[in-house]
Amino acid sequence: MQVVSADEHELRAELVREFCELVRVDSEPYEEAELADVVEENLLELGFEVERDDAGKKIGGNSGNLIARLPEAQCSREKPILLCAHLDRVPPGKGVKPRLKGDRIVSSGDTVLGADDVAGLVAILAGVRMARRVQSVLPPLEVVITVCEEKGLQGSRHLDYSKLQSKTGFVFDAARPVGVVIYGAPTHVKFEVDVIGRAAHAGINPEDGVSAIQTAAGAITRIPFGWVDDDTTANIGTVTGGEAMNIVCERVHLVGEVRSHDDRVAARVLKQIEDCFAEEARKSGAKAEFEASTLYKSYRIDENSEALRLLRHAIGSVGRNMTLELSNGGTDANQFNANGIESVGLGIGFEQAHSTRESITVEELVAATKLASCLILRS
Image (tube, rainbow, N blue to C red; front, side, top):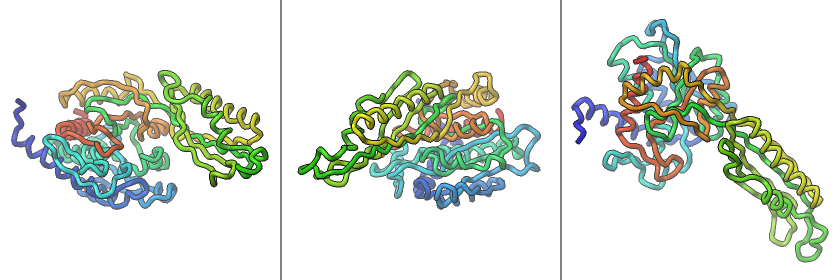
């Protein structure tokens, strides 16, 4: 049976209290301002200088990213590191009612919990407090709290990187146990296809029409779905079109994605998808318009990097073993690496993310906080 000290009991209670307070603040994508205000107030109380960039205006949201740094007078002369978490949570994320079920924090079951990524926010804020109890003057530290991460990393894509000095970053945002380090993630490309046929009355002169649905269906049966290879996936997620059952469908719009750890493979799969739609359109007499945009680029961190060197020591100090993993999902680490900040994603213990079954144990929340504190202290 694990023996928990009085100090540990106090820490657990403090973390549960702060976690529950933050998840009760609504913060779906594009609507993060209220939670941003709360987090900014916490950062200011911890002695940070805080500013918001204009990412919110660029993406149509009500808040920009928070960029915080400890004043130089309070810091030593070491190189700064960056800690990051995000404000937004996926729907249904409004009206979250957290509760403690044994050692596990869960929602009422009709919303997500929001541990993705309030657990990251708590780990960073409480980690700074914990570090301050050990030493009053901390090593140089920057904290970035992003908006709209759940919508293609839009906040970190539009982050003002000129305001940052760190060259090493740690993103507290992975649905894995504390100790797991996401050292690589894929390129993520979104594609959209418009198939344009010709309308006609389906019961009187269907022969005069060109069905966009039938043309799209022909292409869909030929393109790759799911795992293309060990490093690549492809999917079509939405298909919309048609006006009525008695009209030969004139237009169909499809939205899909390709993810790959190899950019050359991603390009090849995208070309294959585009060619399939073009060929089916030629055969039917329709037209296919294809457009692709890269949401974020892949990264893979060398095992001898500064980020992993710091993590080996910090994770060991928490009493965990470091496990390196590749992920097929993206985090703000993708954008940081693309902008010259060598960054990794960190497991912080939440489970069943993006569902109403989402939860996190208090033990993992404690471990994530201690990891943040060890990174801040470089201990």
